[in-house]
Amino acid sequence: MIDFSLSEEQQQLQALAREFAEKEIVPNAAHHDETGEFPRAICQKAWDVGLMNTHIPAEYGGAGLGVVDGCLLAEEIARGCTGIGTAMEANTLAEGPIIVGASDEQKRRILTPMTEKFSLAAYCVTEPQAGSDVAGMKTTARKQGDDYVLKGQKMWITNGSAADWYFVVAYTDEAQKHRGMSAFYVPRDTPGIEVGKKEKNMGQRCSDTRAITFNDVVVPKKNLIGAEGKGWLLAMAAFDHSRPIVAAAAVGLARAAMDHAIRYAKERTAFGVPIHKHQSIAFMVAEMAMKIEAARLLVWQSAWKIDRGERNTREAAMAKAFAADSAMQVATDAVQVFGGYGFNKEYPVEKLMRDAKIFQIYEGTSQIQRLIIAREIFDRG
Ligand SMILES: Cc1cc2nc3c(=O)[nH]c(=O)nc-3n(C[C@H](O)[C@H](O)[C@H](O)COP(=O)(O)OP(=O)(O)OC[C@H]3O[C@@H](n4cnc5c(N)ncnc54)[C@H](O)[C@@H]3O)c2cc1C
Image 1 (cartoon, rainbow, N blue to C red):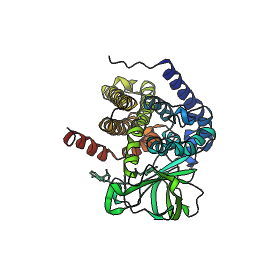
Image 2: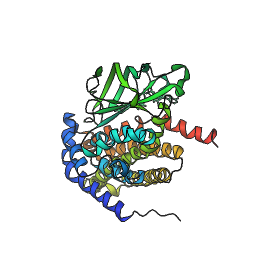
Image 3: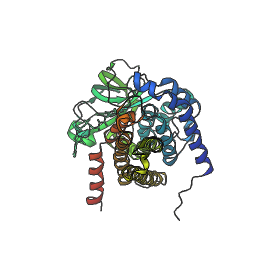
Image 4: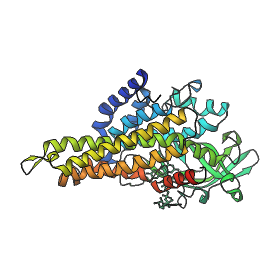
């Protein structure tokens, strides 16, 4: 039986996130966009009310929520501001591989403190010369006695300076390519870590994106996640959990853009009628509504599958690509509905158009999602 209804608990979660976005995020979004100031206080409040780290299992002190639940929260938070939402969600990405592949002792040591005290984490995979092509990374982790020595540079790391710890993937054996990558938990205060300048990005401007350099950083063996050679698998497995959530955030952004477009189309008149009476405007909004509904269904399906313990790589890639491309289109069309005012910073939709673009780039570009979908079709049948 197909059932799209939400449980009472899910409706409460959704309402909590919606209220949080309305009260804490919407009134501050323009300020953080304008100044680029990191939204630490808002993240702290979100942690206080239980809106962060929601997927940490109950046995490690977390709420143990599923990916569907995470998607419901992400959509509402993103409707408020995706820059602030990204700062909140970076924890989800960094914690993902720990939840999937760390030992019980590591989970207690790494995840439980996240539920006891507000703290942030970052996922460090991309490098200056290697984004989509992860195997092109240069960072190495050389064995030295009972330790590993990390050397190399990561790029575009969300929460780079705000994080208390990093999830880092590095080569322990370059010759083995993907099978030679290993994953590490690295506390931020480990000697030899250099945090770069805050990158000046087009959108999501308050999200803290930095290069992180590891200058012979000594990592004890107890911080190797899983086993040597499992880094790639862990980093990618985390995407199956996080891509539906990122896609849900894109849906939230698109919803915000459509809401603004509807309101404006009712208020603005041209040629003696509200502009929504012009079919080209009404149809643009109808297209927005179709894209949002379709994207949300893909998001929910991909999240539902992984919550049931089924493989969702193909569905998560579809949800991510479709929701990201839809958010970009919806935000661009919202600017069009606003006409000249849409192009102006005094009005809300230009921010949404700038913020939307990153959804087609991070967590795997829209091209890479299509590559994954095509591989799933042709190689796995
Ligand atoms: C704001 C921001 C935040 C980020 N946060 C993080 C983070 O927290 N942690 C992290 O590890 N990374 C992060 N990233 C990195 C992000 O995941 C990469 O930028 C992304 O994967 C693309 O890699 P690239 O920039 O090297 O582009 P490239 O891989 O060089 O791609 C350039 C272009 O070529 C296309 N392309 C590449 N290969 C193929 C192919 N085989 N087929 C078709 N097209 C292809 C791409 O789609 C793209 O259009 C972030 C990036 C940004 C901008």
